[in-house]
Image (cartoon, rainbow, N blue to C red; front, side, top):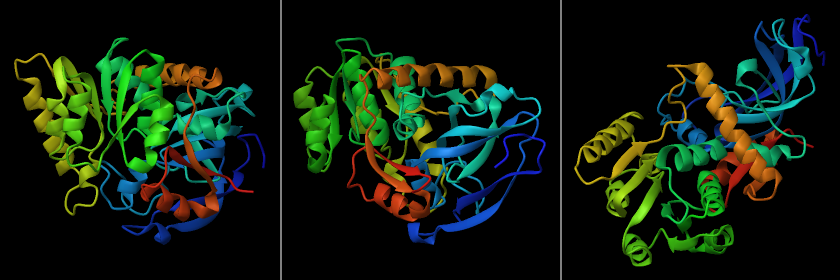
Length: 352
């Protein structure tokens, strides 16, 4: 492969294609020529990407603003720059970066805007870094920018064994915050090892169990489930507490509009925010502010990922890698992520 932008083709790229509403086995592969990057863009050779809840929703046509089928999924990526556009500094060649793509990262190579690149230290394994790109930024921003939970506080993390949840638990414990984390019993040992007190999410009395652990209420609840049970999360808060909702997993298998569950959730959170009880309800949107000022949005992402990667580098944060599977096994990776049998994030790597 050539490393200059003057060539018409920079790579033969292999991509995973989501052709429509299919089961994981319905994913398709294609190989094509990758054109040289345009003025402000670069080519990344993928070293690690991953399976997020977004892809699980996208294959059902349930992600809030997904593109029309067919398309290449892949929410984020870690890779090495192999070609640059005419307006991009050639010093980027051969360096490792992360980027948030929303789609397109399940590929051997991809083209991204140079402005979206975030440095990844060579001392951090690519798969480990990939595990905390969107997950780490999301957890950091929810905890420190949105909820602003002080040291000594107590929080509840639903899905504490998941990609975002396991990262959130560790960031909170590093900040001196007590964590109660929900997970199935098979993952309780992992949740304890991360530093949280586990509660079985299948227990019909789960919220009562949490109240017994925090009878005075909690400072924040981080809820990716949504649905009707989000009201129970709201009731766990003490006065001054914050509910951070960041997903609608409860409705992922429901037929109908992908936007309706989110709009219903927005309405509910807005209504709660108007109540005179000192509590706060927020819906976390990773992409908030991008349209208003892309430069400042990109700067915040880079700053927050840098904070997270520093903690990874010094051992304070251990990325939870559920499995590493080659790009050729993307269907198996998606199926494994959806099985709810693993802790952490399923990572896709180039292959042997």
